[in-house]
Image (cartoon, rainbow, N blue to C red):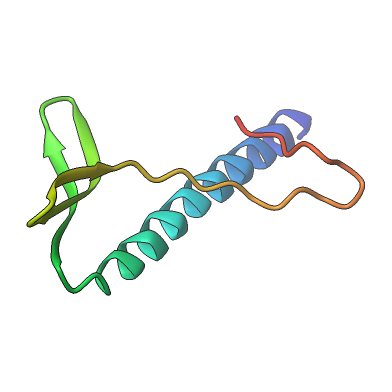
Amino acid sequence: MIFLTCRLIRDYNSRRIKRLAYDGEVAVGQELQYLTDHVAFHDFQAGTFNIDHILVGASGVYAVETKARSKPDAKDPMPKIG
């Protein structure tokens, strides 16, 4: 029972972190769509890695990597990731 409880907590934390990363990437992608002078490509697969966002415009080509962090708890100033 203790093993299953520990595994459930670990899986829940992993899912929460992945969901936060996904929500952050979606939010950045939605904001990048409002740039009128750039064309945005999202989640570009390049070999063994991916590029979150690519912006193409008259001023150049930009690669945007998205990182999302949760707000720290009031009692814990540093969030635990991983």
